[in-house]
Image 1 (cartoon, helix red, strand yellow):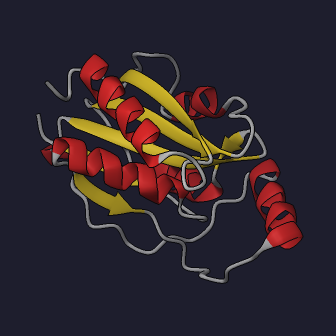
Image 2 (spheres, one colour; image 1 turned 30 degrees about the vertical axis):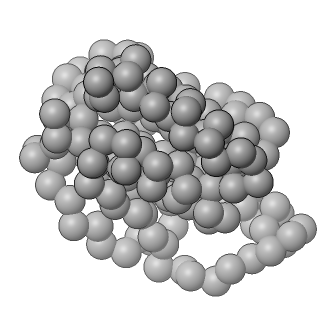
Length: 168
């Protein structure tokens, strides 16, 4: 099964998980990048990021050269901002029509994932099976993987991928 991992990472957590998934199943990797590359830190990051998520901002994105029709499965990854997917993933999903694919979702957070998976599914037209023919086959979350035990994250990913049927 040909698989793509498409993700947004601000602090490196989702990048770490995406790289581990890529290595585990030899997936193609695509990072969503915003046109605004200003790096905010500390309180300003929380204020800016929370505002972006709560007000449902859709930042401009750099082009991402991916043909969804060439993949059987797409794994989408996002950090959690104010209980929601990062605005960059929201922009990506609003700009790209994904249809007829198996989808798996992962998120990274510092304390709670909120309703991030429900919100992503709603953007994909709701439920486990939507009218575009997509099927969400699995979800997984990671708490601060950059600060955590890499071996633990790797084992969690391996087990998840096996349960999804993406790895033997």
